[in-house]
Image 1 (cartoon, protein in one colour):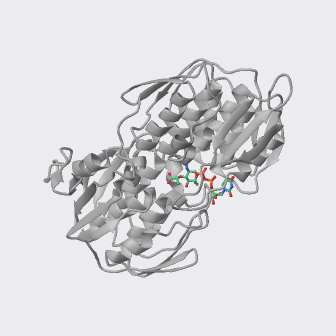
Image 2: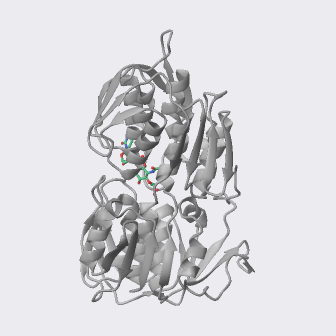
Length: 450
Ligand code: EPZ
């Protein structure tokens, strides 16, 4: 299954974008990364075949595949269809060298513990955007009767007793963590008795995971609300499930349309998943019209106007869209304040946007953005996944050429972004290694918009 994706160390490729692009046409949105990753982990709960559809081709998805394979799972991929068979889990320990490269791999702890009664998963550790502790995951599993202790950087969990089965429990989450909600919901599907998760995360990806587990026979109610009730069952059965479209990718293309004052359409999307983003785009001045139940069109209004944004758990404004919207606000008339409340270190794109001529000042977790008439192309470095997307959309609106380094961040979460942008009329090229070698994928002149 593994596709080749460059590791951070060997990632010398750069993306060159010629700005002041006018976008035109339609873009197809891929399956959701943050749903595919956890649903793949969820397949560990099932001793039979599972077929997943609309699975995006991303570095993170390949890595999750490698981690499942290291536990003994069989995986085969055909296009965006992924067949997973976890009838035999030969290993209860996830390998550090793989887990350290993908935080989401910590999601395997719930399903492996629920299936085998024992699981050892290295601590995922912090990343560019924050410390990312897993205390809520651990405390929830302990409440379900697991003995969990952290030793030598590994979370060791096991369930005592003859059945080695977790027990249903009432768990209040101090913070509506997406990952902790997903870990505990998965663990509870095979537990003995009922589990009630209070102050649970309500993100669409949590609902998608619940729907996948229900397709395998799990008994889950209330996903998408603050209270999720899971009645444990002895075992689950095979399922054929399609992953939801990626709302963060969709929002990134909507911002690309707004920042270039272009008219484009995108599908498949689930507009309800984009409520906060659409509200902010309209406040900034873009026109958003539903073309059909799963297709949106963005077109220019009367210029771009400043607005304030505060990131919050769903249904609040998503932290994964914050950087892209900040890029848009750099060329929106007036002063905007962006407040990041979910992660403690997610304003690192500010320095690179200022390198492109933006006027942003940071104070704690607030960024004050004074709109400027235009940005100018410059060499910039991506510091994390969504920061890289912000630099791409900023480059689309900038005068001249922008050269973006750190593309391994981008490739973790955006499928075929280069080609999708070229189809919308963007002039770009990806250069490998010593920057003189042009990569085959990127002809210089844009592809005629469809
Ligand atoms: C998921 O991360 C997403 N990742 C993130 O997307 C997204 O930003 C985040 O949810 C919030 O929406 C995946 O789904 C793979 P959290 P997760 O647990 O589950 C604190 C992207 O760009 N916390 O909701 O790790 C934590 O430190 C990525 O696609 C604890 O304190 O997010 C953070 O401040 C980035 N203890 C806050 O909660 C815990 O045990 C939110 O984290 C768990 C979390």
